Structures are given as C-alpha cells and as structure tokens.
Amino acid sequence: MAARLIDGRAAAQEVRARVAQEVERFRAATGRAPGLATVLVGEDPASAVYVRSKGKATREAGMESVSHNLSADIGEAELLALVDQLNRDPAIDGILVQLPLPGHIDSAKVIAAIDPAKDVDGFHPINAGKLAIGAADALVPCTPFGCLYLLKQELGSLSGLDAVVIGRSNIVGKPMAMLLLGESCTVTIAHSRTKDLPAVVRRADIVVAAVGRPEMVKGDWLKSSATVIDVGINRVDAGEGKTRLVGDVAFDDAQKVAGAITPVPGGVGPMTIAMLLRNTLVAAHRREGLAEPAGL
Ligand SMILES: NC(=O)C1=CN([C@@H]2O[C@H](COP(=O)(O)OP(=O)(O)OC[C@H]3O[C@@H](n4cnc5c(N)ncnc54)[C@H](OP(=O)(O)O)[C@@H]3O)[C@@H](O)[C@H]2O)C=CC1
Ligand SMILES: Nc1nc(=O)c2c([nH]1)NC[C@@H]1CN(c3ccc(C(=O)N[C@@H](CCC(=O)O)C(=O)O)cc3)C=[N+]21
Image (cartoon, rainbow, N blue to C red; front, side, top):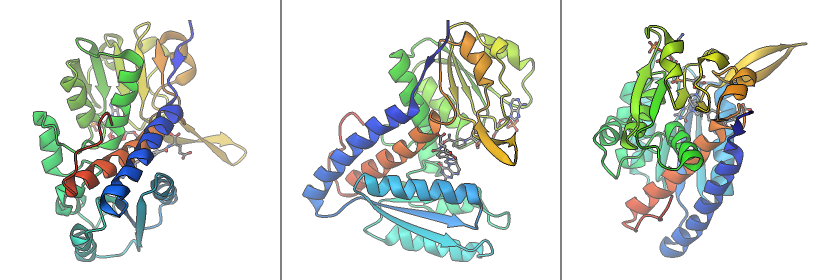
C-alpha cells in the first residue's frame, strides 16, 4: 500500500495561522508587534531565497521583519557588533544569522554572541544545553521542532518507538535525537561512520534523514509501515539546464514501503519557517513577561 503523504505545507499553514492570532493578542497587550531580525552575510542565492521567504512569512503573521544583508568580506568584529546592537534593541525579539557563514568568520563565536533569549534558531549553547537536560524554556531548533510536530500529528504518542536519526549536525541531527528521546523513543543516531546503515535503518519505526545526500536512503532499507521524515534539501540536475529539489530519501521507492512520508519540497521545509515564527512569538512573550500562548 502506498504511504500516506505528510503535508508539511498544510501543517505549516495551521501553525502560521495560530501564530498570527496570537500576534494580535500580543499587539493588544503590548502595543507593539514581535520583531525578527535576519542577518545574511554574502550573496549565496539559495540563502538569499530562504531569508526572503522567512521575512515574507514573518510579515504575513503580523510581525516586524528587519533584514540585514552584509557583504561577504565583512569582518567578524563588524558582524559581532551588529549582533550586539540587535541584542540591545528592545524592538527585536528574535535574531537569526543565516548559516553557513563565510570561512573567515567563526560561526560558533557568532552564535554564542546572540542573547539566548533572542536565539530563535535555538543554536546557542545555552539553548542546546537546555534541550539536552529537558528544560521547559529551551528555544528549540526550528527544523527538528517542525519534524517533531509532523511526527506527533501523524503518530500521536511516540513513546517506546524505535527512532533512527541519520545525521549528527548541531542544527538538525543532534537536537532531533534529543527531542525524540524527550518523547521516550529509543533513539539511534547514525552518521558517516555507521556500519551497515541499511540494517540500522531497517529497525526503525521512525526514520529522520538529515544527511545532505540526494536520495541516499533506499526504499528497501525501510521497515514496512515506518514513518519517514526527509529533511534533505538537495538541488540536482534535471536536464535541459534545469534543476529540481530532492530529499535524502529515494521518494518513489520509499513511498511503496513506508507507512507515511514527507515529500520534498512541501514537507519539512515549510515547517521550519512556521517554527521560526512560533519561536519568535514565544521569545517576545517571555521578554515582555507575558504568559506563553498555550498549545503552540
Ligand atoms: N528542511 C529544512 O528546513 C532544512 C534542511 N536541511 C537539509 O538537511 C540536510 C542535512 O543538513 P545538516 O544537518 O545541516 O548537514 P551536515 O552536512 O551538517 O550534516 C550531515 C550529516 O550527515 C552525515 N552523513 C554524511 N554522509 C553520510 C552517509 N553516507 N551515511 C550516513 N551519514 C552521512 C554526516 O556524518 P558525519 O558527522 O560523520 O560527517 C553528518 O552528521 C541537508 O540536505 C540540508 O540541506 C538543513 C537544515 C534545514
Ligand atoms: N540560521 C539558520 N537557520 C536556518 O533555519 C537555516 C539556515 N540558517 N541555513 C539554511 C537552512 C535551510 N533552511 C530551510 C528553510 C526553509 C526551506 C523551505 O521552505 N523549503 C521549501 C522549498 C524551497 C525551495 O523551493 O527552494 C520546501 O521544502 O518545500 C528549506 C530550507 C533553513 N536553514
């Protein structure tokens, strides 16, 4: 039987509509809108597209969006000075520095300079630590948070399920594993040194692929009825000078085996943006000392 398609666009639209309602309440209570600042260094076209769509979604939710576009040869000190200025700006509730940064800038240093209360990406060591210890007030990285939202929508309780996360980056794989552990899954983190990855994946009730290798996870690696979340965003040649987006999972074959699967595009990507808006809303409430909006 063909897998159910997990519609990330629809789920993201629901989250965004709820955020927009809460933005109105926030506005009524404080006389201002939540504000998100995005910082883009250099002119990587893909990054520029993401940053623009984040800005658009922010405004559509009724929030303020401020974008800073810096030249690729800006010094680390100048970038740190901008972060410091945004940390102090009372109208800014969330700061997102688009990654990757150019090689001459130490991204760990830049991330650590962001006020943890404004770290809506959830990349600051304080927020990563809070997630790891299960603190309720962690700001959680948007991509894994969006994956968890889709999984809970699809499966309800995740307790006791076997989850395999492929990829161990600080922005996707590791926080994803922490979230699944928090839901009482039995979690395996696989990576480039994992022995016999197909055998590891075959045990999984839940597979999260965050690798960056087009269509690496094959249909016959999957246990029948597994729930598959494909985080990969890979642009590949489609002939005639065109390109198309594919995930880290070989979708057509996986779809014949899996119980449910996210498409690329239209899966995790839109959820990432929805969760960024959610985190900005929550950060704004905390900064104003307001009760956090329930159920978001
Ligand atoms: N939809 C969205 O919103 C987002 C999508 N992405 C996409 O998700 C993917 C992953 O992103 P990110 O985590 O930043 O990537 P990274 O490159 O930081 O990490 C990739 C991970 O995959 C592992 N890996 C690489 N090759 C293999 C292999 N052959 N077998 C098993 N594991 C392997 C690496 O292992 P090792 O550590 O051993 O090197 C590493 O842990 C990319 O396609 C990216 O574009 C990312 C962010 C947001
Ligand atoms: N500080 C930081 N935070 C990030 O969250 C961050 C980042 N840097 N750097 C790059 C990655 C990537 N990322 C995506 C966001 C949305 C889509 C998205 O909306 N994708 C659409 C398709 C977009 C298209 O057509 O190109 C989809 O999957 O349907 C994808 C990828 C956030 N990232």
